[in-house]
Length: 294
Length: 287
View 1 (spheres, rainbow over the protein chains, first blue to last red):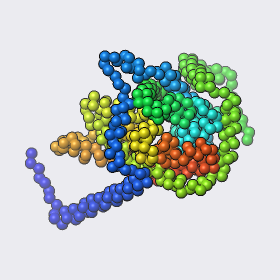
View 2: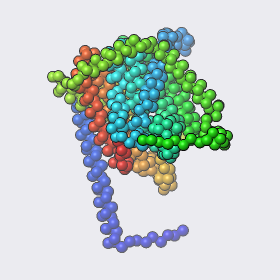
View 3: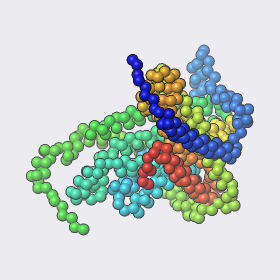
View 4: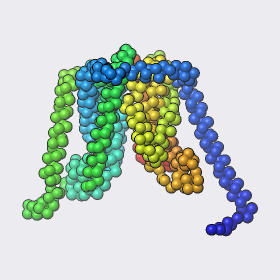
């Protein structure tokens, strides 16, 4: 099928080509500038961060060697006995794992309750008073900016060693991050029920209870489950600073070079995290589906 | 303010209740299910409090102690160690920056390998995803601890830890971004005779790069928070000094260090959210 190609006159073509090339040049210059800035940042950061690639590559075998060493020695003939030796302390570890899960659960629950109480105060569509709203927001921001582990370190000094400071640290951090997410959900609700409730003479708490909560509850639950997943991971390291859970045994195994214990505990943690992820994902999909049906 | 409340008459109320039973009370099945769920959650919580040894005595004395510490923290004061702390701040920034970048560089190919629309073989992308999941299942601090035993104390271990953890998380985010892209440019490249590599380069990359860049910045924000704590296990940065000062109960220095962290995170959030919105071209939402 022959096509007739219309050619533009030369004058027009050169003008167009020039504009095109100028545009390309402009873009290229911008990309080079960004690349240069990034390279300078890398150089500065490597200098401050004491990056020594030569040393790293010279000792790279230590890294692979480490992972090689933490692998247990398993033989096919004596598999049962080898496994039993690898997980020699399984009862104790499972108990610590239950502790870890409970720390994560209580931390999430307490944090979610706190976030639920504060999120309505931090939403622009429910609270017109900027003083209340902004102070609620700044408080939540503070709670989520300070890392859990810093709270845990402080609380371990105040409350003593054990799971309690871990739970409280997780709860405060969870309150901060869930509070922000909850407030965003509340700000995106349909305002008609709120107006209806207000028009019918409902007080502020009644408005929240009957016009806002039914709209947001399934989303809140879904975010809470997501946070629970994250908190299981966090709870597994709370033991590093003495705040309970399986982290205590892990840090000991790593510091004292009990190689096969490291892999045994790590595998337990990874398996638990994956199971929790799968379970909460299913629950969350059901919750979201339930929310959309209504 | 005097509000007159209009109450429907009893007859009207009964008529409305029979016409709209849903509006008056949820159906009994939902209510029972809700109560059972709430009861189970409460029972588990009570069991947890008991199992983990919570008691009000400890809570009370602890809160008292905490209030006492807070009075001791005022005013924040670095003492004579300000230069040291400033250096630690730069170290923290370097850990976050290099860790994110290194992690992103390694995660980039993984993002494509784990995407269903690049690798059609279900086993291949399933395997890549499980590897990413495994890496993600281990917390940054655990990686930091492992790297400290391998490359020694110092910020370099922190960089490696942040990078390793970022591979898992960024790899997952990248693969989701790749799966969400528009097929048409890819089909166009293939139709005009491009190889699969060229399809990725000219059909996919231009679409995903802005998304990836914005996710990268977002991740940099989050890593800036995380890199403050890798020091707790000896991997450099502010966390090292923070853990030390908490152990020796120098509360004024502790509050100064926490303040430094808050300011650093605030500044980084501000800059990077501006950059992110510049890249994906949307106005920042209100604070």
